[in-house]
Amino acid sequence: MNDFSLLAGVNVFAIVLVGLVILTIFSGVKTVSQGYHWTVERFGRYTRTLQPGLNLIVPFFDRIGRKVNMMEQVIDIPQQDVISKDNATVTVDGLAFFQVFDAPKASYEVAHLDQAIIKLTMTNIRSVMGGMDLDQMLSHRDEINERLLRVVDAAVSPWGVKVNRIEIKDIVPPADLVQSMGRQMKAEREKRAEILQAEGQRQSQILKAEGQKQSQILEAEGRREAAFRDAEARERLAQAEAKATEVVSAAIAHGDVTAINYFVADKYMKVLAELADSTNQKTLILPVEVTGVLGSLAGIAEIAKATFGPDGRPPSSSPAAPRRPTVPTTT
Image (cartoon, rainbow, N blue to C red):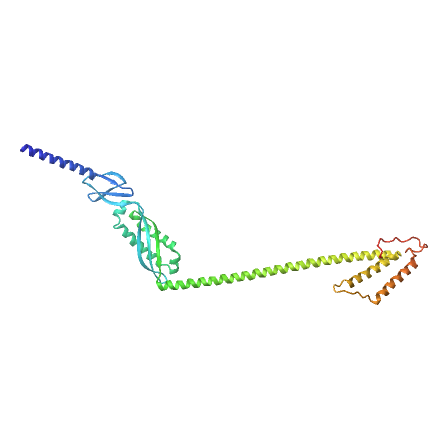
């Protein structure tokens, strides 16, 4: 009986010892997940930080203090009322993105880290946006985010935390102010539409005037070119007539009777051509003086023949016969 009891006691002791060893091993081995850091405390005092992976601590003396999330985190900034510089009350909320880079500071330098960041951000929102008027609040959101980030990040740096971004989600003015802004926006758009329409009409009128101006200039240049060419044609015609008159005059001066006949007949035919050139001319009635003129031509021809001879040459007593011009005779 005594041997049995002793054996049973030994077995119980062995089992307890094995259990104690197993418990000691499990309590001394710690596995830290990726993205987390664990702080180790010995008798309530921070000693070191466990990195992700398998770690060993002293059983029964060391214990895990804080399990700190080292990944970037986002927290909601609750809605709050902010009074602008021009006494307009708006409701503002936002988001804050932060990341712990020093686990011991985030664990032991501040209590309730998330709440601390939220309260700090809300306070600075009132401070930053309270110095702006309503129009600046609504139109300078990037500037607000930048100023908040700069101020809040500097404030949380001693806690081992880095604030990466702060985004203002909504800026909601009062309902009556929204209605006024809507009416103002509508009036501004109508004003711009009317200005654009007037500008379009102005440009259209300018373009039309420019077109008319160019058309008139081109038309005037055409008339000038035509007049220049007409004058040039008349000048050349006058030169040709003057040259013909000179030749005929020279021929007359040298006693050529056929030249006289050609000159008078040419003028006469031109006059008759002008009389007959009318489109409505059906009947051509020659004046009485025309027959007189024709008779004068015959008389002139007879006088010339008597003076210069039948062949139109001067008498043989003259020292030298004149040279006959090359003017064609009329038939």
